[in-house]
Length: 175
Image (cartoon, rainbow, N blue to C red; front, side, top):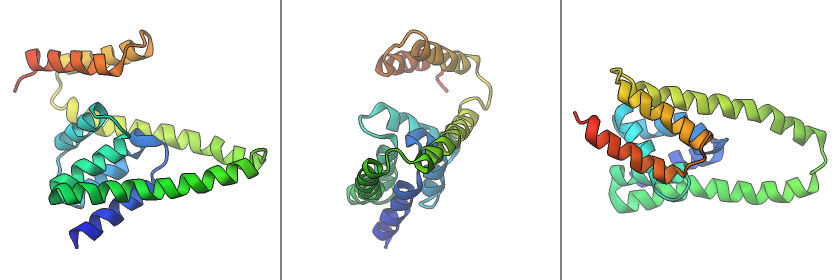
């Protein structure tokens, strides 16, 4: 029964989650909670692991939750649940977009979806930020600000920045 629930819950995320992995974080968090208590700190770890590993964040998060819930088979089933609706939907959307490419309704819909996506990413920032900055640690705030600068202004590789952040955390942020 847990396998069916994993598939269905992550299929819901795959079907209804718009805007990419970061925008889907609130929905992924709610789904993770259905499979057992997960603190915001544990969810922040899930996000960090999902960001560090290759592949889409939502798929990696589904794999992580599936594995923690029901082992390797749970990971496979949750991953399939997450990916299957997206695969089907993108196939349909591509065929429809080529047909209705010039539609003002389609363009209007995309115009309306963009601010929703920004809001979802913002809510993910707040959710993950609460676990990072409570209690307040100036080193973690400095890492966050430096990351924004290194990615946004200097265009550094996220992999390089994660390594630097991990080293700084290991040296200065031990419990």
